[in-house]
Picture 1: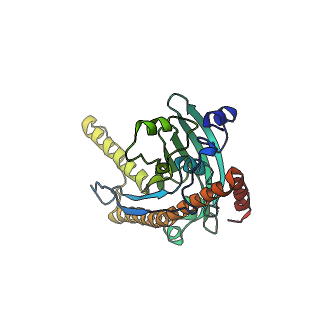
Picture 2 (picture 1 turned 90 degrees about the horizontal axis):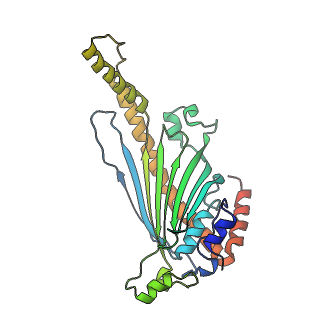
Picture 3 (picture 1 turned 30 degrees about the vertical axis):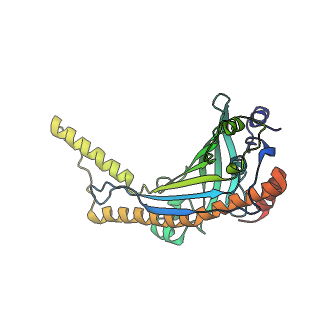
Length: 309
């Protein structure tokens, strides 16, 4: 039996930890069933003026008909797949296993390539977004994950490190093994055994996803205006003259707010389209695990890398 602890001690910087034990996979059905419900909308706002901050959210809830051990492993093996060939590379920065809490914490860095929507290219110069002549750009994504082997849950957070002054994207995912409806003492003892085959109720993993999109266009100007306000207050108290700040016109304030709102709306639309593809990509990896194990997943990765983005 190949345990998570054994794998971590032998290879602490492996890019794909073998979570729990490979023989413990119990795949509920021959096909993956995904039940999804998505809700989107604007976040709470504090509108003191026309340049007030605005945030947009996306949320989704669904389930995989696979046990938590298979889904948590597939998460670390999901790039690349037929639906995510834009992921150029994945590197593990750090990994730590807490034997007392039975939790694995991993930090990874993904390099993703994409083509910017024409609407965004019309709003901002390509140089601001680091795009080439065709509108292609790339960005690093920092991913942090915590897997609780004992309790059967995983929490992840991913955020972009590049051009976040234009748009900050924070994605959080929660994977949980459903609790037994009427657990008995025998059921509890079963979950505490490393060699146990989990009951049928474990052949499902519930997933909750939330994405927060926030454009920071105009924030530097707002900070400068705030700093000027503090200087003006200090001047009135000390009587020392300071350089008069340049006033922002109504049109400039409206323009930055409109651009910011447009960028967030376009990004929200892309998120609505990309999230279902992410689910399908995970389903492909899970199907490969079921049919051929980790070797089949690695072979699928090799084939996907050979396909031009």
